[in-house]
Image 1 (tube, rainbow, N blue to C red):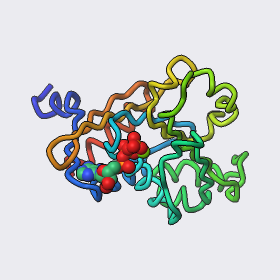
Image 2 (tube, rainbow, N blue to C red; image 1 turned 90 degrees about the horizontal axis):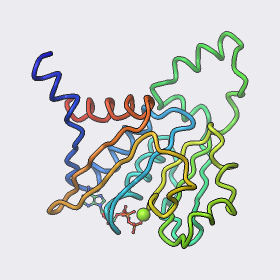
Image 3 (spheres, rainbow, N blue to C red; image 1 turned 90 degrees about the vertical axis):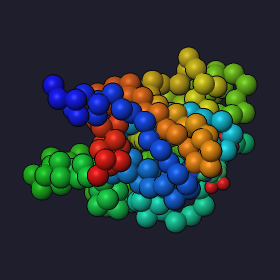
Image 4 (cartoon, rainbow, N blue to C red; image 1 turned 120 degrees about the horizontal axis):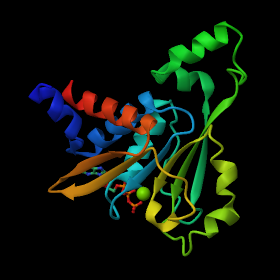
Amino acid sequence: MSDKYHNSILDNHLQIINEEAMTDLGACLAKWVKLGTIIYLDGDLGAGKTTLVRGFLRAFGYHGAVKSPTFTVVEPYSLDNNMFYNYNELEDEVKLKADNGLMTKSRNDSIKVYHFDLYRLEDPEELEYLGIRDYLDGQAIALIEWPEKGYGVLPKADVIIKIIHQNQGRKINLLSQSENGAFIVSKLIANKNE
Ligand SMILES: Nc1ncnc2c1ncn2[C@@H]1O[C@H](COP(=O)(O)OP(=O)(O)OP(=O)(O)O)[C@@H](O)[C@H]1O
Ligand SMILES: [Mg+2]
């Protein structure tokens, strides 16, 4: 194994110098995310978690406000199916299925994205009352701020994005927790090296 290859596997850090770079990271995530993916966004108050979610949603052409749902816990977004697959790089597989008449979901269905902010949760059990299982049905994409507040009830993440303040910018650690997560992390790292 060459040193270069070895390093690329171990190196799961990114330097994100400003807000724009953070929205770019969200857009890159949007390119490689599959339906059903669960992303934990770990970081202090003001780390840039919502900024990343904003970049993610903007990539799919969503132009409305994107704020932390601190009081409502979850903010649902319905993305136009075509907008989603036009931007998302996993489109080919879907297109192929549609052409072959194998699609069970119509191209007109919307893609569900749920942005959670669990900061004010007092007990992870509250997620049960909110109907978290109905939200995360394996088709929806979830981006979750303050996941530690939902420990025990929250489903396992595919990727944990840990954001740490560093001077004026941020340092990011990417931690994959599944095969899908490892794929996403590899794409985010490859984007950095481009
Ligand atoms: N990489 C970055 N470098 C410098 N500033 C950034 C970066 N990413 C985001 N910011 C700025 O940090 C501020 C806080 O961002 P944001 O609201 O996304 O944080 P948050 O982690 O969601 O916080 P909270 O836990 O309070 O919801 C914003 O003003 C944003 O512009
Ligand atoms: Mg936030």
